[in-house]
Image (cartoon, rainbow, N blue to C red; front, side, top):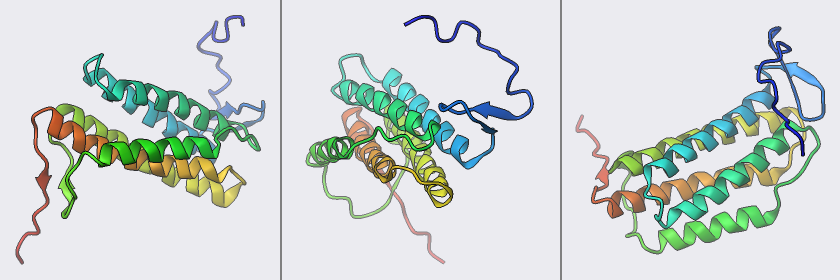
Length: 183
């Protein structure tokens, strides 16, 4: 494959439009661009999370796999009518959630995001993922999309939540439980 990005600026988006994967052009604030753009934000946040972990941390492999998955989700959302995400993506996330969650004590109260730096990064990635899910849901009300992309994002945010809990404990931090303030 040749150089795909030999010139970074093209000036074609100066009018507020951007090109989709099928060659069509849409406004940069369209529901489709919002959806795949927010998936890109999740990917960047997962990258920050990975960078905050030791290179040999057990979550590194899964998080790298997730970053590749997120490119697939974003690519799918960038090309109208294109499907790439399969049930295997969702099943892989469910397996990962179950594995991490099995090591954690039951959660009886809400927790405040944080606990350690890595756990805080996982929480930011989780909340960004929830936004990506909302943007993708909005797109699904306007155009047909692969429903497995929504399921994947939903499971990913769950995975990032249990990972944040695990990281808070592993890194010597603690989970701070939310306290309802008296009236």
